[in-house]
Length: 90
Image (cartoon, rainbow, N blue to C red):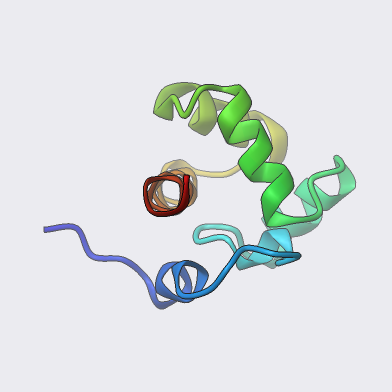
C-alpha cells in the first residue's frame, strides 16, 4: 500500500484552479521558486508539461530533475500526485 503525504491529500481534496506550483506534492519552497523562474508558476502549468510528456513517469521525473533539480523522492511524489489527479479528474 502506498502512503501519501498530507500535501498530496490536500491537493487532491479540491479543484486545481489557480493553485501555486508549491501546492504539488514533492515541490517545496526551493523547487517551487526554481520552477516559477522557468515559467511554471501554477500547478496547472506543471500538469500541462506532465500531459505533454504523455503522463510517462520516466520522462516527467527526468524533466523535473533537469528543470528544477528535484531528487528521486521529490519527483516521485510530484508524479504520483499528478497521476492520481488525472485518474480522478480527466
